[in-house]
Amino acid sequence: MDSRRHPLTVPRSKRIRLVVDSDARNEADDQYAIVHALLTPRFDVRGLVGAHFGVRNGLDTAAASVAEIHHLLELMRLPAPPPVAAGVSRPLRDAVGGAPGVDLIVAEAMRDDPLPLFVAFLGPLTDLAAALRVEPRIAGRLTAVWIGGGPYPDGGAEFNLGNDVDAANEVFDSEVELWQIPNAAYGMMRVGLSELAVRVAPRGPVGAYLFRQLVEFNDAMGDNANWPAGESWVLGDSPAVGVLLDEHWMDHRQIPAPIVRPDLSYRHRQDRSRTIRVYHRVDSRFVLEDLYAKLTLAYG
Image (tube, rainbow, N blue to C red; front, top):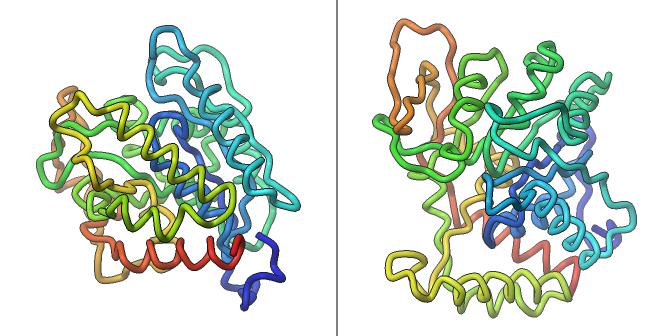
């Protein structure tokens, strides 16, 4: 973001380092979260990682996510865009070798820097689990914010978790500080397409693209009677930006980390000392209005 267009600066003591790990080509809401993060003065975005979203007819989905991230950066016309790297191309169980995106996470975590490091995972936790295998010491040097998992206490089907259950269990069993935003919370990010047409589409080439690609995906799903609804959407990845802007102190609790069963349900162990932060609510209006304001400041 051109700092001359923004009416405030954030004191360095209040800033954070951020890496965004996103399955950006999966559907249409990652793009909103990525753009929002890049327009936020509090965030010093140190890198963007393209995550996989499963195996799709031989498609390298991590590479597809990287291409989508590059397209967003071209549209945003940032003066100094952050580096972009591909994450692991398959779920952890099937992965072979490393990935430049994993190396990016490890390098940033091991960097000596007074600013705290957060890594937002908008897809599976594959790259975090892989990074912990490469360098276990990163567990004490970053906070992971993950969009994923079914509702508490029972769990259940959820796309991001389903794309790598093994990775989620490794992270849940690690010492890394984890903030989980399950679908019962991220599902609160409801917005009407008409609102996006008015508040996002007019905001330069990137605003036009954000709106158009969502409408195109909505239209492509026209034969699915159950999802999406037709005139509304859930910007489910945007809460990762929201809780880093404001931690929503009244909207989360600390619980023992569950074990994820193959059917994506949770098995709880109350004797487990390892705990994670789980959000049960996000302030969708706060997050949306902040996005709209920053798009307007940056692109008129």
